[in-house]
Figure 1 (spheres, one colour):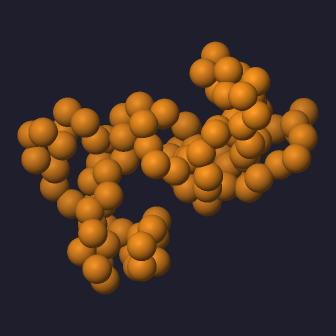
Figure 2 (cartoon, one colour):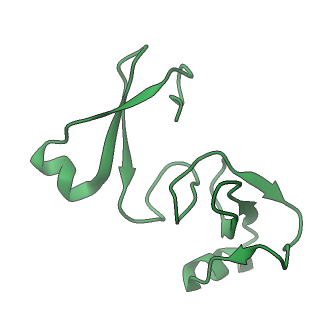
Figure 3 (cartoon, helix red, strand yellow):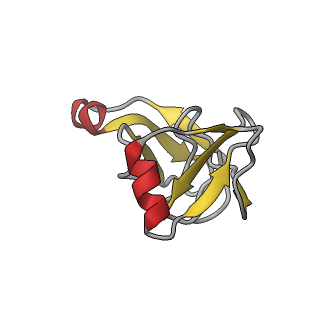
Length: 102
């Protein structure tokens, strides 16, 4: 994964007790030292990521591909009704709707 602010490489670091409650993992940028946490819950992050493998390298689709699997979460379909984008993870080949940007 890459840092949002400088594009540097993110490395996993040890979490504090409070961070263990909130984040699945905490990553630190090797270049600028910025900390970024991966949330446990799918909807609380700042940018969209794959709900299965947590990858942020997503492809944006214009329509549903019936060959690829669809993320069958009611919240994902609720976001579809609000005009969310359709994303597909190239690694685990999962499609899902998300209102946030890549």
